[in-house]
Length: 280
Image (tube, rainbow, N blue to C red; front, side, top):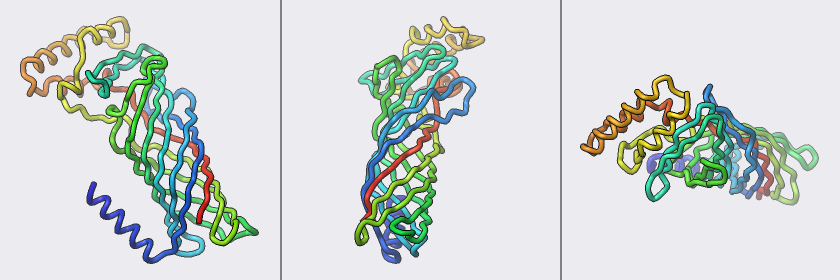
């Protein structure tokens, strides 16, 4: 992380030394949803959120610029799980396990600190207006997440999310010259997810993998699996081994081998944003 920050700082310093800089503030709404590559889950509608932050453009010529920003982004969406899902909630004082029934939804509310970086091409002024297009990538840092595992439950979900995420973006807009270097701007930007917002790894620790056989028993009411008894027996054997020897990796290995059952609730966050702001 330190190396990344040093490289980013040196890059920005180089841009600042050999270019003209303009900066400003922006705010705007977004519509976000999940991109899902799975036959057992699907996106359900869109979620209205918002974003705000500060932006900076480093111009190498009148028509070509490096653009970046730092912003808060409130996004999310709803996913339906055809076969249900088993969700670990790590943010609770005692990690718990929640069962999602067949064809039920989970609504996610995700907050990120984002630093989009990219390039912008801009026309010369036509009257008081100039038009631009932009594209780039957006590193994202997880700030907080919540999920309605059951209707209105608003469960904390932060530790289930990966600390880091990554999107790409492309968009277009216009700037309206007001006075001097002051300009009003508006833009529409599409962002596409590159990484799943839920982390993949299991540490194997007791706090991360706390569960109960009774919760697993709930799956017996579903015809989701061809060999539920085999799954249950494997779970109980792995848990017994783990309880007798906490250093054993049996529990983590069992969960990793049964990803389809335990962790098939993933997705990439996409969004359409409308931003308005002022540049100086």
